Length: 184
Image (tube, rainbow, N blue to C red; front, side):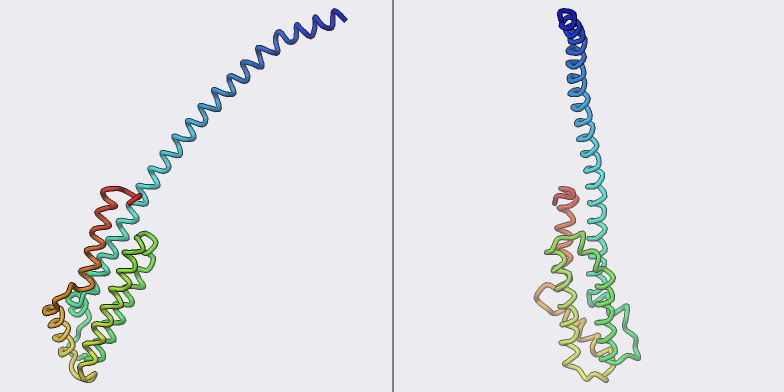
C-alpha cells in the first residue's frame, strides 16, 4: 500500500504542474483569441460603415436628381412637343413623374423616413399642381397654354416649390451623413 501511495504522489507531482500550465495556457490563448475576434469585428464594422455611407450618399444623389428632374422647368422642357394638346402634356408629365419615382423606389431603404416621405409628397404635389392648372384649361387646347400657365405659376408663387423643400432636406441630411458617418 505504501508503494501505491508513493506511485500516486509521484504521478501527482507531474500531473498537477502540467494541469496548472494547461489552465494558464488556455486562459492566455482564450484572451488572445477574444482580442483578435474583437479587432476583426471592429474592422468589419468600419468597412461596413464605409460601404453604408457610400450607399446612402448615392441614394441622396439619386433622389436629388429625381427631384431636379420632376421640377416643372426641367420636366416640361424634356417632354413638351409643339403638336401636343393640354391633355396630352398633362398625361405625359404625370407619366414621367410616376416613372421617375418608380425608378427610384429602392432608394427609400437608404434614406430616413423623413426624406422619403418628403420625396413622396413632392411627387404628389407636383402631379396635383399640374392637374389643378390643367383643369383650368380646355383639354383640347394647344399644350403651349399649359406650359405657359405652369411656368407662370412657378415664377409667381410666393411659397417654396415642393422640389425646393425636398432638395433642402436632402442637402441637410447628406451633409449630416458626410459629417457624422453612417450613424447620422
